[in-house]
Length: 480
Image (cartoon, rainbow, N blue to C red; front, side, top):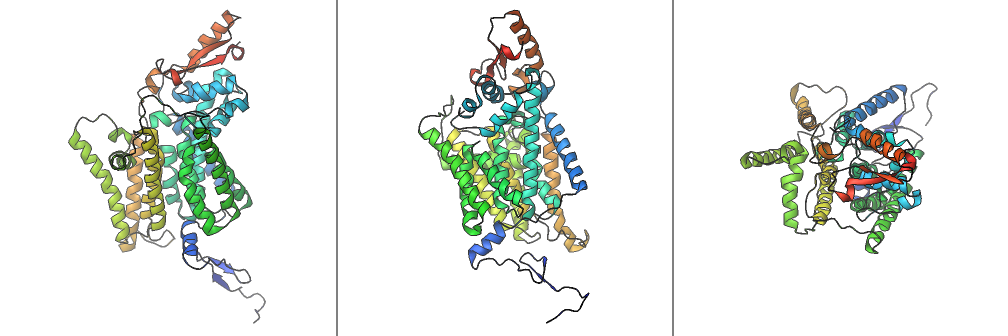
């Protein structure tokens, strides 16, 4: 059969419904459940062209995200820019300033290695000591925004509309759980990094750079937190059903990183001994914590749920309200007023519960920072349940079809209000007991210059009574 000159080339739809010119072969998924699982859970990401407009929008969002983050922490000086918090100073900056890079990177903390925070500490300590606080906080904020951008890009294969991708990416920066403890802090970047890795595992990159970047990112996360172990089964499933090189390399990278972390702990080279911590492996207790803390904080924020409980009746009402949001999303999905991505919602929900369970069982409690990764995963599950029927043009907000947008608009409004209500949340120690960095630099510089024999001076990154992470040494050679 021939085609007349100038006639349109016939097209046929590919597996996603997009036209494929004749002569090109549309990808054929393998038969049976592996093919269905592959297309539903690990779809290929569509390449997004880089345009000047997109570059400008991205730069504006990054700038806003960094400013948003740096403005959240109160302090004795300029807040986040004039204070160094906890392990950021007592461990990472201390080791970078007093050890060789090899010794610093091979020094575990709390039972595991922290590769990425130590990279940031090495960068920070290249600068004058007076700039360490501002540099440390800025690098933490930039890293957080970078993780949000990774989520936004990686979620495109599952969530076609920008609003949906924004809903799963923005909470990485908004962080309405434990924001007084983890915002502008490099030690806790592992928590949003785990969430970003979840999305990277679900996204199949088609560009060569993406195929290289995904395994590298998986390796960095695995060498930065042992909790990457919780995502290893998902990586294995992807490698089995997709059989792509990037997926296999991610499994290898994660297995290598987690293997090194676990071997270091099992062999006794790294110990995890935290005073007052007693593990609790009771599954009923674990589920109770998830129901009474994780779910309520996810939908209502820490300021209202984890504050001092004075009126128990109102507190219980808030817990029921939060569960009402989640159950309403499930009910709407069942009622088919939305077009739910059931598999994505289930996978995100299972990982939220599993990651929460592993953390709190080992700790025997629920520190605020442990709530963040599961919060992000539950938001993803909720968005997956409430995907409107059509985000393509032509759908009117009026009539039956228009109502499909209402649930996602309500969810976006709720999360925005919660984020605003939790923008600043004073930490019991961080915003009251950490002294101004600039004042410490002034005092310690004078001390080093006054005594030529003085080798090092003490800086504080926490309360004076918290010796484990409250103070650290800086060589006088860096201050004279």
